[in-house]
Image 1 (cartoon, one colour):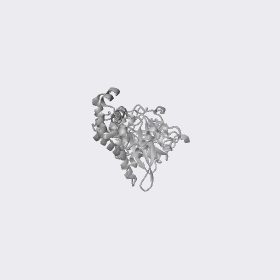
Image 2: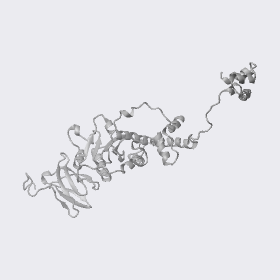
Image 3: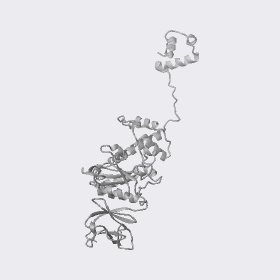
Image 4: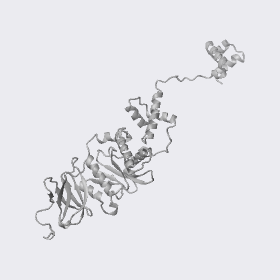
Length: 398
């Protein structure tokens, strides 16, 4: 029983006068009369101490801002995008609204049942992070699976810049092959310049080093002077950025009706690439976008001196004819490249840039010839060829 209850009941039940109660309990007569009136009006409940909490709080989140926070949470989640407190902060700032702390946003989301408890994660201090210093210093690549509406499984190939997390390329295929990897990599080079290195897993479309050999993609990297890096087998953490990227992409795709065809899925991914690169803030980039980080600083380049940002690369596969030549269409005209008769019928890959054509043996990756591009001539000789005969050549094989 509280002190207020004792005073009131001493007066009403025990016959103590107000003056005696004031002297005994050292309380003013005015306060005692207030307690008596409260008791007469509301009974014992009215004698409980009132809360000292202010009726208003000037720092409280306004109902309008609370509604916007909840709307952002639902909209971002429905679109398959990150909708955590830091992301909501980013969007409130873009809208020039008051930006509360992440703790306040988290309390609001929790109070409205919009936070799902997750298992305890590893502490951040246990993680060993690395990041390239420049854009184009390292490109990561990997592919993941997706399912169409008819249940058919397709594969999605990605190229991701390690420094900025900028999504360079994203395409859907029935099955990823080494040639698709080469074509997508060449496309990225033509649009963004060649990288200094690549980082992939040990999939056979990227490397056959574990089989003691080289595939076409590895040979292309050697010709361009690009360093190839591969993670340890069964250790996907090495390619952690692109592995985590797959999760972000799947959230986006799964938030939409399942695509009916590869073409429809590609359209969904094209939209995702624009949002991911230009609109979605990234926690690892100080809440900026990959596009801002990728275009902010100078790009790294391969160690090969003659590979520059302004050169365009494309790849063509062919077979040397019986006369030791291959043909190539350049600027609308057919050009003839003289390799040598001793290489007749060999399968080759031609690496074409704005200045020269390099012809390589597909099987051995040996450079067979180099040809300067001369738009004024239809025959381009091998500029590696020394005057006179090559060792082992006779009149029959010249």
